[in-house]
Image (cartoon, rainbow, N blue to C red; front, top):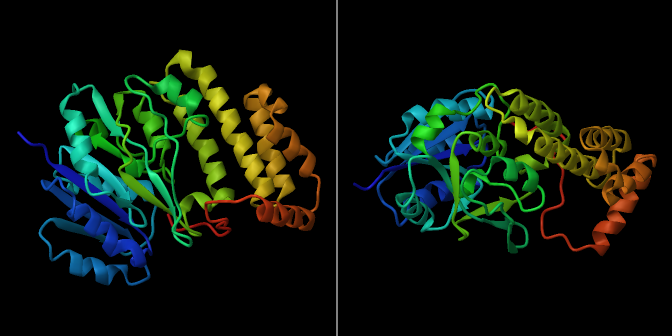
Length: 329
């Protein structure tokens, strides 16, 4: 019996991409699917696009009048899904045509203890059209401890590149009171089920100035809280605590370096670099930690000038931008 798949599309003020996101789901080579589009209180023309899209019987639309926590919106959308598997798509990204078909076929050879099939993905600069393959974890089986250890060295799992077994998702739903778990959801899921890596890029993440991940100043404290919550989970394995400390140190070090290079805020950067050292003292010897601590004493105008010079010298494929105001969730 052929399984059914539900695609959940999340949208907030991405009218310019929204129709394309819906079409890439409906145009999949795998046809036994339904699409649930949840709109988190958009103030652009998204509601008009969605009212038109809802004329297709394969499309359900959840139009919310206000903006709330993204995770809570996903929590509301899952009961509307009819599929045995669920694929997540942000409205500014898109799937390649065989994405669902390839991952469903992979699931067919796996036991019920496998909850996720995931793949690499492309990142695409919307300004230049340049596309590059992103690193991804690339491990299969019971991966939780290795996931922590290699989160920064091999790459994380992007939600738009993973197919989730519905039963696994229902047993371990999104945290409705979290800001948004993003790739962190797969860390939590990996404590409970096995993962399978399919080494074929099947999705594209658009890189632009309003990506949620560019809201560094607002995302960092949410990650601090989330990692504490992850460790406090009763299911957290004792033998993974050191791996979490290492992962936490690397994550905070990266935030500290971004505080220098992206925010030009030495005091903010220093706080996260010190968090990195307290989490994993070996971070003190990392070149970015040492350079970040040294540069953190410079005034912001000086950091701005140094960053502008560095950006002229170094070729960046991604859009260099920071969302200084907290993005809608």
